[in-house]
Image: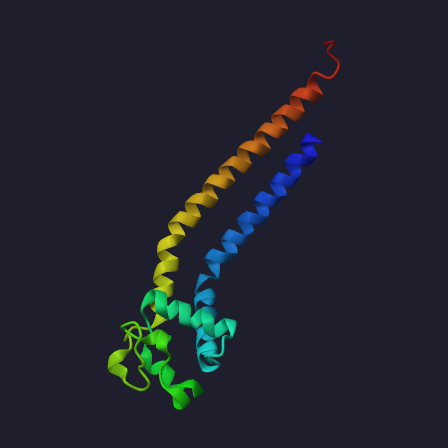
Length: 157
């Protein structure tokens, strides 16, 4: 049973290792995918409570940004042609920006989101490394205990 436990722990460790390597190798594709999806969601934005639109509003409110690269990204959307900028783009609370670019945040959200993700990568890597160390110690100790039990199985207790 200990060997089976150690094998499963080794399998989980290898899956985590492969996931980390794939994430590191394809990090640029992840950025491009995020940017493309964010642009697509912006074009489909509506204020009726769609979960994607809510996500855009939360990002824009929390990070004080507007659009993907800047506020002009909104000008290509149906929402802008109907109602102007969304309220989540406002520099101040309780404003109604409509089409007034002076009332909205100038910076885009993509750079801000990527900056936050990249700044938190050290924490994620550190925690992952700590978990991996504990897994390796668990694998090593399970094999040692299994070997000790196997070698001493004929001793009289």
